[in-house]
Length: 413
Ligand code: COA
Image (cartoon, rainbow, N blue to C red; front, side, top):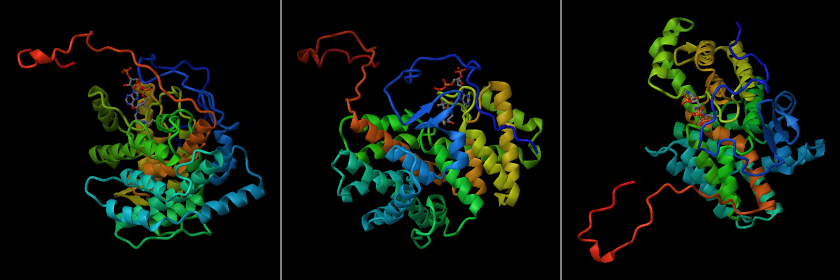
């Protein structure tokens, strides 16, 4: 079976298919960074290209690279991993907050995660400091504790006892363990690990920029990360991995498994185009010729599906990938729009039995490395981030207090 997403690097030379439009700070250079370079031709973390990292590094190594600033030696990595394992447990107050909020009717896991991270600030001895050493200590604590928040939250949602962190497991395998109470295979742990590497950093994306704006006021790391989590939740950003899987479920329900590869899927898509619907997990502000990360995760996720092929909501995992590939082909043929990393993420996490509302929190578990690196970079060389706006409101007029009872109200702008 061929996949619709060949493992090729996006071209640096093909012209972007869509015209640039105004707004959204598109194409604006908003600052400098030594952490990451996002270009049509390559995605690079501190000098290392993403295919290289996905093939050869572990998430712990990448987190060290991003946070500490260099590739760890064996001794560095051992010490770093030990520190992270030692910081995994949550304070009772945060566990209580999770227990009290995770099942509230208007709450999704990203809300509980945001509140829990904010609550961690109250108990962190370094909370108020923006000093480099304090920031590094806080970033390691957040890196360690966010997976535990996700795990505890899922346990509460499932109505099961809290699963404590398992020190013998690496970052990804421990996250899976805490969420499900099951030890996953080495293959699954590696796929989850690679997904964390792919999600770890992406220069001035919306949530990182939000975090930099907050830290640029010399506010603290927990506050900046709390704001970044809120930004990531939106379906145009990190929330797209959940939205992409929900959309695929909708297509599967509407057309049925037997329609995969037939014009029925094309008709569904045509209807989406006709109604100007945004197809989640497609498109990107920077990558117009394909997201470097998408084929890497697609191929790994599909390999898991092919190996074990669990039945998911009545359909074999491979069928979900076949439907996804058909959708991708139509998007490319009809709209010249490529999938972003969130599209294969949805199918991959689905194959591994991870509940859909935890996909974006898992993105947080990875992106905390990038956010914290940017917050530290901002604090180390800070200038308040404060752009200006182009005023389009009414012309100057006089506020006449005497005539408030007789004058007609201002027209709404
Ligand atoms: N589905 C349908 N059409 C899409 C699309 C999508 N996912 N993404 C972009 N387009 C279309 C737009 O409608 C627009 O068409 P037009 O010029 O005819 O109006 C054109 O492609 C350019 O898109 P634009 O919205 O200007 O791109 P942007 O840079 O502002 O937005 C995203 C980028 C990521 C927000 C956008 O592609 C999107 O909403 N994708 C879906 C959500 C998603 O997957 N987000 C995760 C990003 S990693």
